[in-house]
Length: 319
Ligand SMILES: [Ca+2]
Ligand SMILES: [Ca+2]
Ligand SMILES: [Ca+2]
Ligand SMILES: [Ca+2]
Image (cartoon, rainbow, N blue to C red; front, side, top):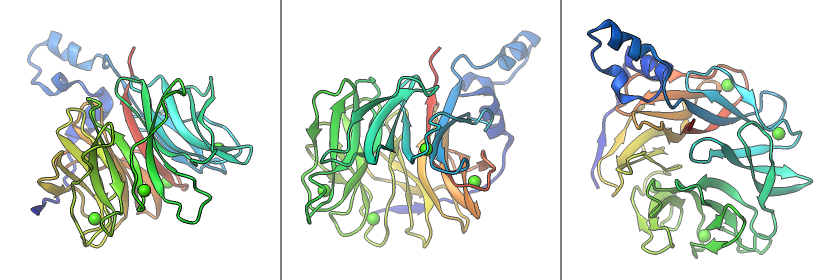
């Protein structure tokens, strides 16, 4: 296994420009005329939004915000815990886990908090960790199969967003979780402890060919997230003694560390343009959302609140 460490933390103005103007690759091109300058200052055609969870209002709620940290909005406003949010493609809806009426379920609602529906009730699955497919038609999630039995362990399931077609993908006595669709929908990356500690795996969308990508026996590797072009996977790992953010090729080669400071960092999430990665970090004691360029430069704190801001997902919002 080749493990290359490439830890660079250099503040740059490029990240700030990207955060302000969104994910249009052309915005960093040289501006030579007034017309081009005017064009460069136009608002992005497709703004992006970040979703995360926080306990700032006294219990766990789901929040949305712009990628520069502005307009942080509580979109659940429910007295019970709301967890594990993810965007639908296009940012119109949010899937998340909530405990309502003393039962944990997988819920879907519009991004403004309206239209709440329960997709997967607690039942025998205890759903967790939803992730929406890029075609908008399916959600993959982790859940306990028959979780009230002594040998309970997490498995991965897929369900259509209309509630039909529930399918179990893993059959393994170890914990299987944190599933994430590839952008083309053909693969699912996930975590499993089947080889003795947490590793990032990949499988075909039908559950076949489950393959260990990280192969790092000395460490626990955390939540995978595919780059928008499908070529890279971001994840976190404690292989250097503390949780840092890593990227690797989608076949597991060239595992590179992007961060290097004492604070624990978790749950990487790519930006829609593939140039940045968001994550949670406890650098200031409690957790905040940070953003870093995909090459490890320009680490920037996005939230600033004495509560815990975690579990980030990032989407390009369709008009
Ligand atoms: Ca809540
Ligand atoms: Ca399992
Ligand atoms: Ca590992
Ligand atoms: Ca905080």
